[in-house]
Image 1 (spheres, rainbow, N blue to C red):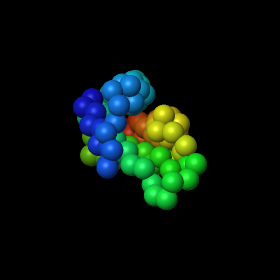
Image 2 (tube, rainbow, N blue to C red):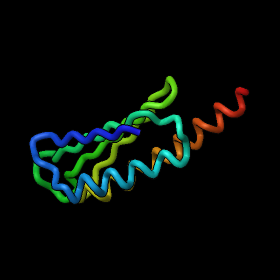
Image 3 (cartoon, one colour):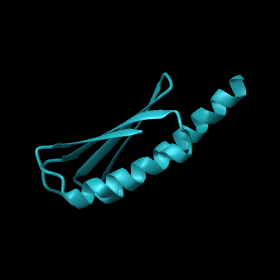
Image 4 (cartoon, one colour):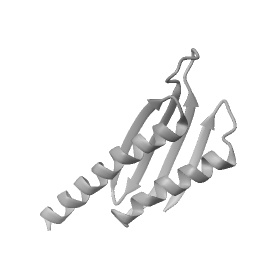
Amino acid sequence: MEITIQSIHFEASQKLEDFIMKKVSRLSKFNEDISLADVTLKVVKPETNDNKDASVRLSLSGTELFAQEIADTFEKAIDKCVDKLERQVVKHKEKQRSKK
């Protein structure tokens, strides 16, 4: 799976990028058809507690899955996105199996 990380209007630290790579790559164990994960990070203005916006778009065999979360840290937002996508990937795989 190819993972791209785009941080808008700021530079993501290597530690944050490593965290994202580790978390998002976990999704491939639920479905090996995932070819691309596109992660977008941005800070929402005005400055508030929950101003870290993370979105993840997965491309897999003719389908795209998407999750977006806002939290007080990018790590928490990514965790929530990965949890949502995990459920979506499992559901998609079950649908594919039932079609066969």
